[in-house]
Length: 346
Image (cartoon, rainbow, N blue to C red; front, side, top):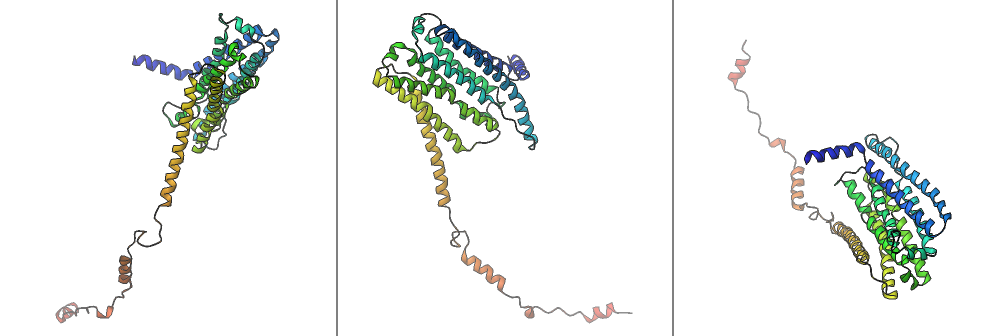
């Protein structure tokens, strides 16, 4: 078993994230092709124009994966030679372009008549397959992130990456669950029109939001440069404010205002909001304690507070100030006459 594991590690090291890159590209192609099929089969043949955008996004994705390898090599070289130029990865641009396309396709599909989707309810190309297609973005994000860094497991860089991207996968799945209400015609009929647009806007923003942590990681070279702790907490707060709070509000409105079934992701929203609030409290508490320690630190206003005893200082000063009386010193002993004559004997 150990030999098999060693062989697997050596093989993966030689491939250098090639399997992750191949699977990432394959999932992207599957997502693009599936969404194009829904648009063409249920709307019109004119939707084939999306293939051009897909080709551009796919080509740029492959370029980003290849460019990340050279960027990582140059970043390692920069650590040895600080004078060399820095090259940043471009994975965040690829994610932004791909999900702009996904958001546009889903928006076009939802804003048009979806009677054909209801007719396909018992076939493979039902609303469940459409939601699964959108949810492929979670896997694409993880694989794309893997190709953009070389941080080892348990390292400081890996912990930094997980701190910024730990909830992205769950946020994407949460967004797909929000789409469920818009894809169900029976539930959609009881919604008022502005609420439909609000739900769609929240979902689109949630799909584009992972661009922010990817951009932050690229600028900090995935942990090689440290980001201030305050900015990390600010990022977490923005994720809660933009993702979890709107999703929770939408679910509460659907539940209490329109009697739509509650989703288990409601607990996810509540838990993440609570955890983020508690982390912010712990951060402020730590800063407050440090401030209190500095405030209560003893100052040198008196000799006793600084650890100096006045009596000892006076004694030392008095001892140093006493002059030495050389007049009272013991006179030298005279030489014996015998020794004097012995030394000067001719």
